Image (tube, rainbow, N blue to C red; front, top):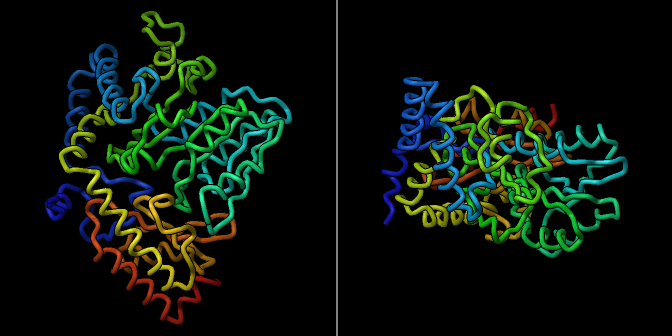
Length: 394
């Protein structure tokens, strides 16, 4: 039996805030944060030894722990600060010619849409945001809609395993398999995946995968990874050319040398992965995740009914994890989000996705039904207030 009251006390979150936004920024548990501080203290006590001599070994230990967790070779992983950084590495080095196409969806993370648009325009290639119909009705429908964007000019696919604003689980394994049959490079944004749903990179077989460890894995902020299959690693240059290029003491891996040796930086957050994994193991995280998903499923339609909308997907584990997005009848989402925080002390995102607006709540170990009831009652009160129109039409 999991002691959720004790588990809640392990977080550093402000108790005066109803925190329903784990999907944007995860919360670091006290044991993991303490480990983080110990690494920082070790760095400051002898920075030269830490960065120049011992750091590679520390990073190796951390990468090996992560590689075991996500089932891949530790030498195919490098730590980076966030998935946007990772996709910039890929998009900048990917050889694109005029007319080439990168096939994606219209529900990807906005920062990465911008990344692909930037580099595609420089090379006169095209970033194809293939529409996915909302509400989603089946995996097969998503797959069929996605491949309608394919052409003889498609060079690679880029797709999220769990989307940001819509919080949808997409059938990435099936799409990657079909992409490989077409000879396409497969690039997956798994920002929301590690620590959220099971991840087995050997089974997924994506050529390139990036995930955030500072979200659902609960590592300190600025801890993410980039995985590239060995055969494709020579294609991708580091964003910052530094000591790893033409290294005076090269390691067994040019990939690691190029992307790991970035000069002076505090990589302490990367070293907390073993402690984060231990925290999840010690607290039976599969059971914690099951409970969180149950809360999401039990409340999704309830919230949609309140605001007069409908779920954007079947309410099942095939399409949902520990978060869901409520379609909102609001045209001023930024104002609604700030209103919920300033007046009700609720931290929850309200986001635009093209012409739609979604309120996305995330559930983790410290959340209870009472947290969702606070949000429900706040929305009910806002909608009953005649001034609610100000949040819709001003």
